Length: 185
Image 1 (cartoon, rainbow, N blue to C red):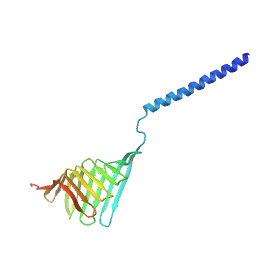
Image 2: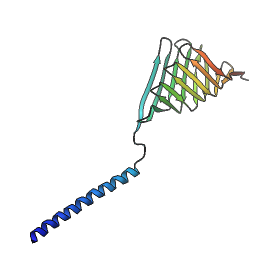
Image 3: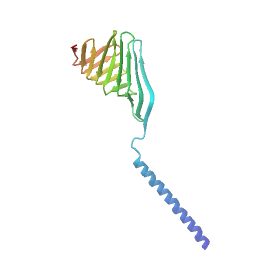
Image 4: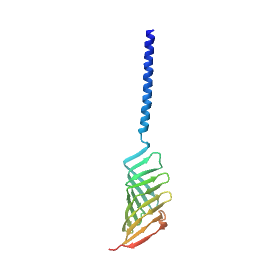
C-alpha cells in the first residue's frame, strides 16, 4: 500500500509539473505576441546599390540608390538618396538627386515626393533647377512634374505647375501654367 502511495505521489507531482510547464509556456508565448511589433516583415539593405536602367536606341536612363527599405508584403520599396541620370546621346544630359523616392516595381513607376535638385547640359549650355514632385513611368515612357518646376537656362528662369513629357518622342504631352522671366544680372 505504501508503495502505491509513493507511485501515485510521483505521478501526481509529475502531472502538476507538466501542467505548470505547459501553462507557463502558453502564458509566455502570449506575452511575446503582445510585445512584438505589428509589422514583422521588413526588408532593409544598407550599402547596397540599386541600379534600374532603361535604354533604347536614343536614351540612357538610370536610377541609383545606396539604401533600400521595404515591407515584405508591399508592392514598392523606398530608395534613399537616389540619383537620376538621363542622357539622350546627342545634346541633353541630366543628373538629379533627391532625399527619397518610392519604386513601385509591379508597375515600373518611380515617385519622388520630395524636392529633386537637378543639373545638366543642353547643346553644351549648362542648366540647373528644382522639381517639387516627379513621377517616372517606365512602362509608358513618361515623366510628369506635378509641382513647382523651376529651371535656370541661358539667362532665363522657366517655371511650371505641371508638365507631362513623352521620353521616347521627347515632346510635351500636357502642361499647366508654364512661364519664363529674364534673369537680371
